[in-house]
Length: 79
Image 1 (cartoon, rainbow, N blue to C red):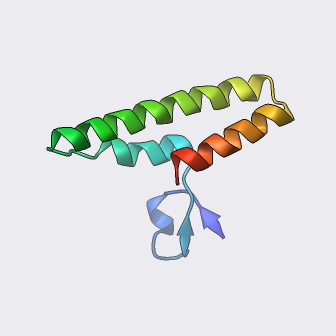
Image 2: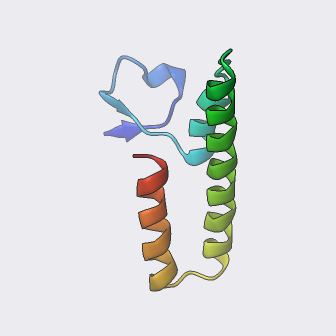
């Protein structure tokens, strides 16, 4: 069984699964001090939100080609 990040499930289930919005909050909490890492986090968060906007557009007009593109892009972003 997989659940969301609700604290009452921690320690009970082996896996917690987050939706993208909940996942992003972990990146938001990062506070790197080196300029390269600050940029890397900022770039990743920008990529993350651009991808999320693509998902919202896909929801309005889903199709097989776009599904494949989004799936491949997900793998690239979160590898």
